[in-house]
Image 1 (cartoon, helix red, strand yellow):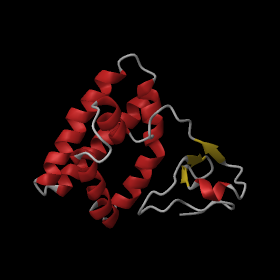
Image 2 (cartoon, helix red, strand yellow; image 1 turned 30 degrees about the vertical axis):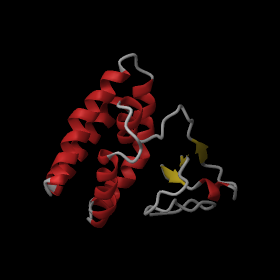
Image 3 (cartoon, helix red, strand yellow; image 1 turned 90 degrees about the vertical axis):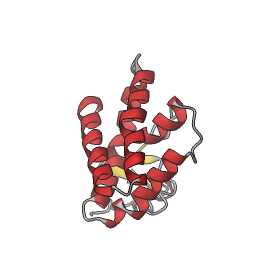
Length: 155
């Protein structure tokens, strides 16, 4: 993947420090690299959300802690399964690109609470259940199909 002349991409293993979006390469950037003066960088507006619709559904809509079983399971699935598959790494990067826009657009709606509850029940609970049953490919396809649906509606 090309790298913006003045930037370096965030550490994908730890997601350390991502808080901005490179409009040139359409991916999230490590804000430390922005000190070098990337002209393509835009800070992601903070509206009390992480920019992750999985976290938004669990923490903000359901009141769960950031280290809840659901998010811990999904993060382990991302790091230990998805990132090690040919398609998974690309899908994880795609998620980082679109998720903040999905969160922002859902939060602007008057029915956002219902949408977050639906994401929690229809995506998170089902994927976590599949992961706990070691049905990793099914969990992946559920996640991917749902993500593409959210992207179509909210991006």
